[in-house]
Length: 117
Image (tube, one colour):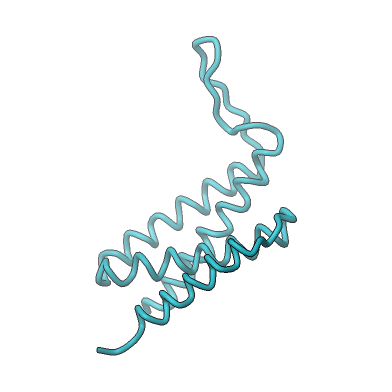
C-alpha cells in the first residue's frame, strides 16, 4: 500500500509543480500591491494548487506510516528526478553536466538507502 501512496505522492507533487509553473506564465497567482491582495488565478494555477494540496495529504500519510529517515529522502529523490526530466521535456531546460552528476548522485543515494544491513 505504501508503494502505491508513494507513487501517487510523486506524481501529484511533480504534476502540481509543473502545472503551477505553467500557470505563472501569465503572472503570479497571488500578489500584493498598493495595499491590496490581487488574485490572478487561471486553470493551471488552480489545478496545480489542487494537485499540490493532494500531494501534501499523501505526504502526511507517508510520514505517519514510515520511518522519516527513509521515506523523506526516498520521496524527495524521486520528485527531483521526475522534475529534472519534466523540466527538460516541458520547459526545454538544458541538461548540464553538473545537473546530470547531481541526479546520478541522487540515484546512488537511493541505492545506499535501500541496501540491507
